[in-house]
Image (cartoon, helix red, strand yellow):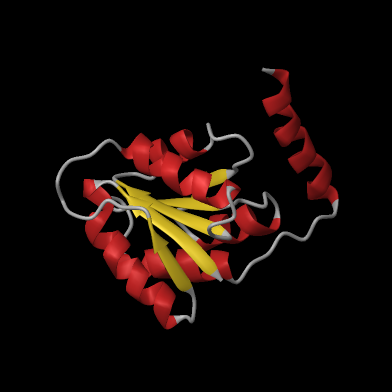
Amino acid sequence: MKVAIGSDHLGYDLKEQLKEFIVSLGHEIVDYGCFSKEPIDYPDVARDVARGITKGEAERGILVCGTGIGMAMAANKVKGIRAAQCADVYSAERAAKSNNAHIITIGALVTGLEVAKSVVKTWMESYFNGGPSQRKIEKIMALEQEE
């Protein structure tokens, strides 16, 4: 699977560690930045990763900032994207299976490396199973058309 990844300066170290982990699982990485610990604005990276998903440059995306909250908020503003902040494996599994999330976000200041690896692995091994959730996803996507 091709995975888009991005971070702000607070998430840079964790992003770099997760890149190695994802490659070790046999996946390909597309890195949208940031590329150093110099301060940047996380909405720019969230936008780039989300647009990479909508353009088909990657199948899924992972964003890392201080808490994961801001990245999720920004990515969800890109039409067609569903991003979920995940701090545990159950949330990661449900983000894929129930919510068909294209992107997960992780907080580097609140999530340790081993937990982050477990979250990523669980999410990447989980897939949307439709069923009753399909109708709910369609309603979420219809909200974009109302504005």
